[in-house]
Length: 513
Ligand code: DHE
Image 1 (cartoon, helix red, strand yellow):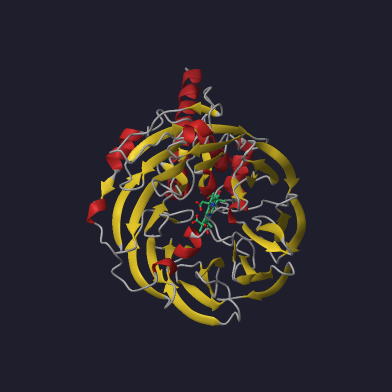
Image 2 (tube, helix red, strand yellow; image 1 turned 90 degrees about the vertical axis):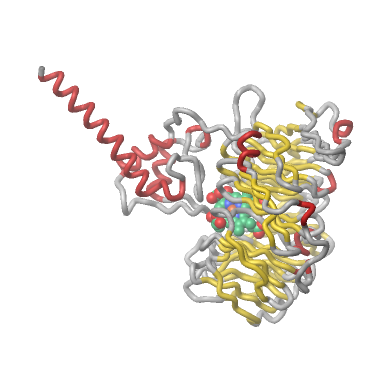
């Protein structure tokens, strides 16, 4: 009898513990990671997505936070035992994993304005190539800014938690925005109208637009897939499972377009593979022998033919982040652990590995030349250092020390200065300006003491630099990029990235693409 009672008490206490964990999750985690652990502002917390994180590490992350992310430590709110229970929950599979394929994307799709109902020319008088798309994450809005007069032209609500760069159609008319919860929105900069939206995944990383303007692709964390959509109305064309073909699947770290190659390049987070997905109609002969699958995408009229075959490139380590050299012949990528590798896209293999300090943020790298030598520079999420790399020898030329780690780096062909932030440090209110001629720090700027300053983008002509004061009562501060004098300050709600049409569609070497 006593044994039965003890057993019942144990059961009750386990049930209570589970309840407690669920309550803890709802209180501390659900807001960012979603009530069902499917992700939101933070990534999905499922065993399928935690393959590279050991459970003991997960407990540490819960208590101490994760560098370079929005994940703060909870040690002041919960104890080790509670953190262990939460980590255990994160490694517990869901009874059923939600499906998000062609049918679900199609069902989610909203066509706000028919592609053939669009105006023939802009309804505004601003220079269409000097517009900025400014993402305000504070209240999930987007502002379209005239880059000559620095006046907002339009402001509209966005999907939840936009992340990654805004992407433009090759003519700069349309902007495509991707949210962490998988939505892609297409917006017309001619008349400031939302054209179409579709949810390409449940938890996504970023999007890319093909250089011919025909396709949009989303890199997903959940499901483990890439989704290709028709850029005209976001109709799904193909969902490609990100896997090794033998049962192991992977999150997709990021996807970009490589214009001279007419292909998308995607990095995988849980497989040591880099994928090239050509989108040109004649891709089949080019990739004969390298392609593991070849299927025609959906045909719409005669205009859209999307084969989207996948060329797998086996590489030496996982890639969380990468940067192309300007001819798109090589890319340099790194895992968050700091081991960088150069992959040659022509031969399809790693040609060099190099040690970079801390946690390089290659996605934020820039290219420039010094004394005729093509260089790139990358910020670092963990160390106060900008690494400068020779893109011919792929050797580190120098390390420029800064007063703390930062997130973004930005330059422009018409300016000798590159701007970086110290967002990941106690000096987060300060920007560091580097002289690319001397590879030295030229000066620092503190636009709003005590407030985070980060993410810079130049105007099309490189004359002005726009800086975010990354706070709820934040601002966009416009500086003369030569004299560093403040020109204007526009109040904004936690502005994160800002993307200049001309710099993006012109593939400026000082900005991300
Ligand atoms: Fe980003 C771009 C990955 C955290 C704001 N970030 C990107 C890109 C990648 C990436 C792969 C390039 C996509 C593109 O432009 O198409 N980001 C990651 C991470 O792995 C990381 C470290 C962890 C995570 O939470 O996913 C991360 N990023 C953040 C943030 O915490 C930031 C500061 C705030 C936020 O909004 O989430 C943030 N990331 C940004 C911004 C860009 C970006 C503003 C676009 C930069 C650009 O100029 O192109």
